[in-house]
Length: 249
Image 1 (tube, rainbow, N blue to C red):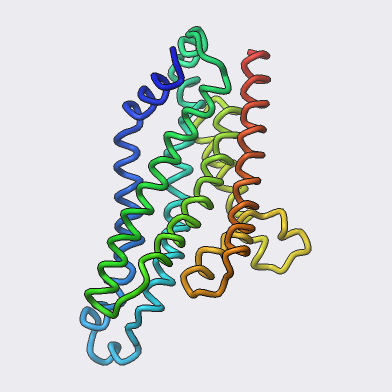
Image 2: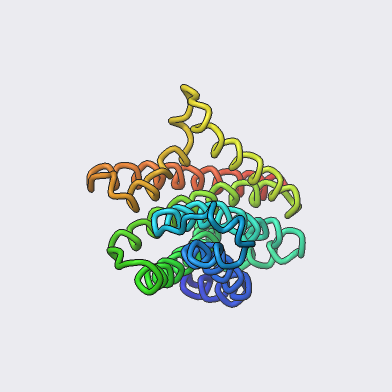
């Protein structure tokens, strides 16, 4: 089995998950600006005065919702990558084919990451339309760079989840561990810990800063590179764990 065929197989088997992921990003991400505009009209008049609809607040919600919900769903669509194959007994059949473990790991990772980038791209474009139609013109370039940053952060979550999917035989266990560690890493930068540099989510601030124009191109590329570095490390650990576990079993 060639790597291309392995990729096609993964897309066929995960297409429903991909559609769900894109739909979640579209709903929670792109509707953030929409809700900013219409919330004052949906609440009682005595509460409407407390809301001050603004494009800035809507875009901030777009970043926050996309990162939070995108990370949660990324875990859910990744936990079965290897643990699911092991649970169903299809992993042995896959390993019996002329395909390396590296190809298996990369195919499963890149398939899910493709959904991440596509979902964020669509959400960014719809958000830009809402901003233009409901508020005021906003540079589409900034939104696309923000969507790219969000996608890279969520891609790290996919890579982290791959480690536990390779280690365990249970999807629930993989979800528990990847969710717990992702949450811990996300909290670390907020408590001003001296160890916050080990958290990819510290560099995830790149998304918000890009949207507000508070980052230079060099800073953008540097932070993006840091997150990608963490992701590559996760994939290397996944491969090591996958080889070790399968050798033992």
